[in-house]
Image (cartoon, rainbow, N blue to C red; front, side, top):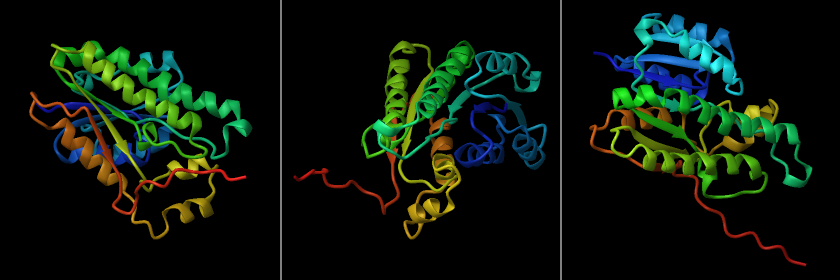
Length: 249
């Protein structure tokens, strides 16, 4: 029997790459995202028998519930949930930040993630599957302008650990994957489409690619059932830590 994975945020970046990786290995994929046209394109690429797209905004609880209730029979069994949908908005300091952007990050990265997880936990317990949450190195390592984004990813990591405690004895595995610099639409979204900022960040850095993260996700989901990786923090070789900031008078 082929397995099924539900991947949120499948319209680009990590989610699209992970969808391709799982389908290539014979899995069925449910991909979610706000952009229905991109889900349709991915469905045409991967095949309707392999990929089912569900278009909704992670901030809309009713839409999440309706999409899960409407899953075709061929995709109704869910073995793994990959909570990939998320975003960062803004790069400025907290004292000048846009509150609407803060709320959107919290509502998407935290509230949406816990909502779909809660809805799917009974299925995942039934299938003895697993949850992979995409956090970030920002969950550990703060940087100027990271404020609420880093806070949301710290929540994702801690929520993953809490799930491990609550799911003990069910056979359900939980992993927090925490990437560093990875080249994707992430920076364009964060900067409002600033291509110059994108090019400056990634230029000459040899960053991770979405396919690298997809391979990591797939590796975790295909480990023996008795193995759980609690967390994986990964960076490109070119990225490391900075000295402490010191303000001088």
